[in-house]
Image (cartoon, rainbow over all chains, first blue to last red; front, side):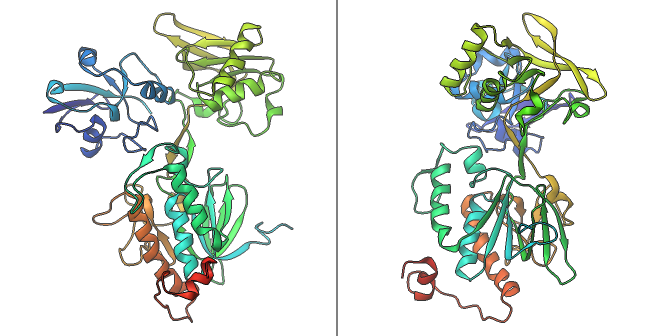
Length: 102
Length: 347
């Protein structure tokens, strides 16, 4: 399956993703710049992405913890998510996200 | 003159940069070999990422410890190394490293502590924890004159028009503490919900209700002013648009993030902000400077706490040859060696 990632220069990358992988892990392992300091523990707020509006409804709702951690991000929008909290699955084939500034 | 100033440096065997789990365990492995340690860490307490990022989150992959939190792991390591009397220099960043004429490594911190040692161990993880900087154009020009990421002296803020940004404990604690001093205070947060301690949030809400301060639900999108002097901040909200509020000083509290920092200037070979090491001694490109834990790199490296523990043990063998060149290294087990047990205070 494919994960589309728009980097901070506006360039779109199509990344091969695997079922069950975190969006953060896909971005990190393909070498795009995402800090993801805590390694996926929803503890650092350094994997902030904007989800393309068309895909928002397909994602599980944010947990309270994820919403709290977003307080440590900048330029938070209603499409903001932490990429470590989104797991790839068949329905998300083609999911598009944009790396947030910072 | 106090110990540790430039004219009177501390002298010890090993200086460890970073007091996370790997730095702490290195104290143990070095201690068993009669090597004394000083540790420098930018945080105000031990534990590194375990203390700062996930003190309450479970860790399941420490050998023989089925589950513990980051804080519990830190506490246990501190208990384990207590017999070796490590000396901690918390709240300080290692800023410079040089060699003395008589061949000691001289490490200086941003609080002018000077430690000279025979060996340096860099166990700095992902680097120094530093405040997150809002990605606002020209914010650099206002830093230390109008924009502050920490409060060192409250008096600096007396009689000023303050804007504090954030929704965690730092933002709320400083809101409540600085409000009596400030000429005016506005707290800016992206939502009307705060993860800070409920008691502090209640105090803030009372201050808002009594007119003692303002609360703006918005995000900061720009700064106004010139020559380092802020005159206002621009706020934005998806419904209300953009507007500005006047202020003299801005205090953004968005938590901490890791930056390699001055370690990059220590003259070591670096590869993508990591320190390449060999897998026998975990030594860097420079003799006597070792790197263990998340900050090093070698073929097959895994950023796991248990890898860092292993690296600490092997590094200590190599450090022994430098610190005690005249002594034969005797390999012993804590289970059977009365010598080691005496060092641990259990025999």
